[in-house]
Amino acid sequence: VMSGLELAKEMLNFAFTPIIMLSAYDDRETVKQAVELGISGYLVKPVRPNQLAPSIEAALARFLETQALTRNTDNLRDGLEKNRVISTAVGIAMERMCLNNDLAFQHLRKLAREQRRPLRDIASEIVDAINLASTLINSSPQEIDRSTSND
Image (cartoon, rainbow, N blue to C red; front, side):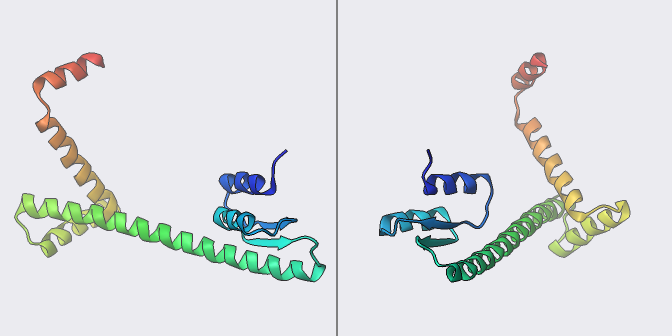
């Protein structure tokens, strides 16, 4: 009921996996659609047995490279988010405690060591607390009355 391209699309929607298509179609449009879907390899029937092993090896190698790049991207994104939260907390400490950047960072790092907790957790709590306080300060008493009457 489903074409090979439709099946591949469903498979890739479920999980990123290497797919090698064996197809009777060699027209540019079909191959283009396969490439756009993320197909790892495309072989036109009839396929000789000696074509399969190199195609499978290439598809698996490309898949492993893509997985490694995805992991690196996730690690970089996580690192950037961690630095953003810590930098924001340092900025808050600088403003509230009248410290320069280095002293504010040292102060937060010392607090994290004393509490034996990751600096990121301390920074997140500081940023969250300031955001909550700002929301409370910026809310009118009528908004607070309405929200508490609904609880």
